[in-house]
Amino acid sequence: MPDRKDRFYYLAKKDNFRSRAAFKLMEIDKRFHMLSIDDFVLEFGSSPGGWTQYVRSITSNPIVSIDLSPMEPIENVHFIRGDLMNPDFDSILRENLNRIGITNFTVVLSDAMVHTSGNRGRDHASSYLLDERIMNISMRYLRPGGNVILKQFYGDLTKTFLKKWEEQFRYSGMTTPEASRRGSSEIYIVFKGKIHDS
Ligand SMILES: C[S@@+](CC[C@H](N)C(=O)[O-])C[C@H]1O[C@@H](n2cnc3c(N)ncnc32)[C@H](O)[C@@H]1O
Image (cartoon, rainbow, N blue to C red; front, side, top):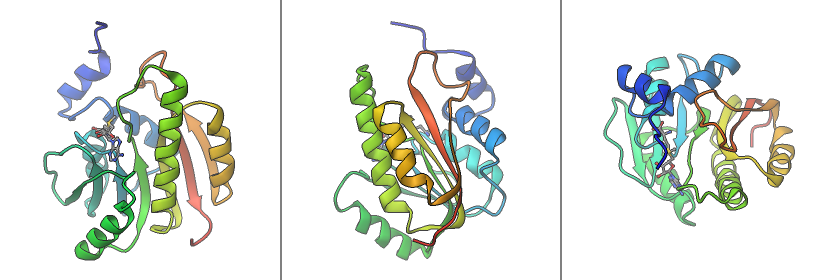
């Protein structure tokens, strides 16, 4: 069994982040300037909450976070436990947003991924399907000018995915943070400045 406790694991412990994943978001944000103090964030695949903690350190506005697994509370975070691939998820999200009183967001984030299988093709396809679903669900809530960060395992469909969605943004790109594990095909897709009001 390889030792998965690298430098980012110890940094996360030192900085009281719930997961080393927080450093990936931090790196992406530093590089692409994705988050600001005024943001309203919708986050998929949030548990255990490292990304959420990082977002909390930037803005005190409410955050809506979603995961299959439970998540320990964080101040002013509305956590929805659910499966975004569930056909009913759309209406579950809408009901929750109505209840909370939030109608739209300035940023959509996703670090969602089920356990990787080790099969690159399968992991790529699963992450592509999650990202398609996330974009289809969340674009109607993303304000013009809004930004998106999505995890994906790189593969054949990544370019198709970018081509499909990039025309709705002023900028699109891909990045692999230093905090991603070496040898992984994990990338993060970045869309900035939503053009249309869909
Ligand atoms: C890498 S972890 C996220 C780590 C998190 N960003 C952090 O900083 O602590 C991926 C998460 O995606 C969630 N996930 C995977 N598939 C999902 C789905 N269909 N619906 C909701 N959450 C999902 C998993 O339960 C898991 O908690």
